[in-house]
Image (cartoon, rainbow, N blue to C red; front, side, top):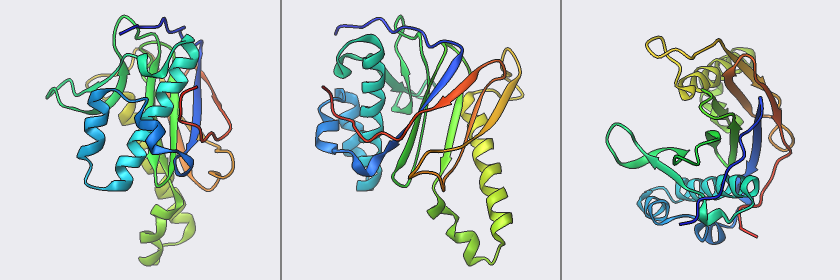
Length: 210
């Protein structure tokens, strides 16, 4: 398989929103590799399978656009480094690992963030539909909003891989993201090294290759 050279991301984290509902899953599947297609078939929840295929194809296209190659040739892997199964988060296989990757999705929306190589970055997203339980429990909107923000901040930090036992090389900062329409009602956070800027792009819906 051809491994295109991936230009490193500069000192900025690029955040790309995706409208998963707009994705054509059949076209998305043509971009995925054999392990990803097998993972797709193993989802019991049909919607979760759709979400996985659309988001992974979108990530492949973003990386291929950076390298000027074909999305099918992007050397992505998602093997869990603890158990060896294909269910972990995506990462670029060395020596093409010049871009840090973090991904999140929630109820028809997704965010893909690309950062400098080896940067400990993490992203998380909460769709407003997920806040209905708190409303049924008679919590106030303000309390629920604070709970949602606290949740995504914690998840973003966890996904960055920085913990008390494995701290980042430098200080991390957690950013509350302002999402573009039609995702503006969502709650999202990005954890990244403090010296890095970030940029949120407009919502995209294309997952098929050129």
